[in-house]
Length: 191
Image (spheres, rainbow, N blue to C red):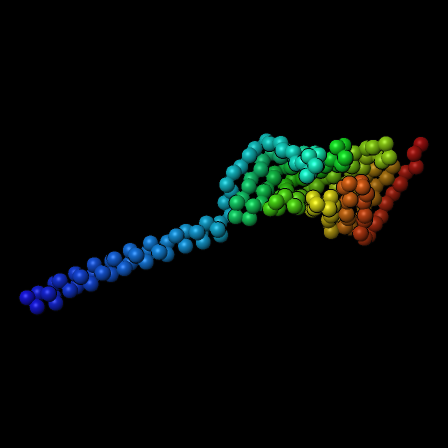
């Protein structure tokens, strides 16, 4: 019987032990692999088309109105990508800026909006200011500071002139521009 045990039962028992050990290791390791794979992937959790949304400040006053052709949200970094966004910025409940871009990425908690492609920002006319159109290739809007900025070339067109520069800051609340370098302009006196 000892020869039968050594030749038939012992190998079978060792094989059964090996299978059981492999199954146990697989159960312990697989959830970690699945979780690591899911956290490394950048897959959207929802997509919306032709949408409009509004953003209010802490006092309940309208800050931004956003619409876009498509919005895609990614849960791994809580970012949102917008295709052909149109953003209206309100200052003291009055629409002050209209910004359009080919694409935008909104950071986690909506702290920053990165506009890319051809970006056009229109300063709307007020009793104190004439309308102006700013064209650039990239623009970052920092919501808490109500600041837009770019290091790229910009062109500003107003009723009586055109100004170009490299780099710019837009102080949205004050409706003020700061041009950073290589400023050139032309001005035609009103008739």
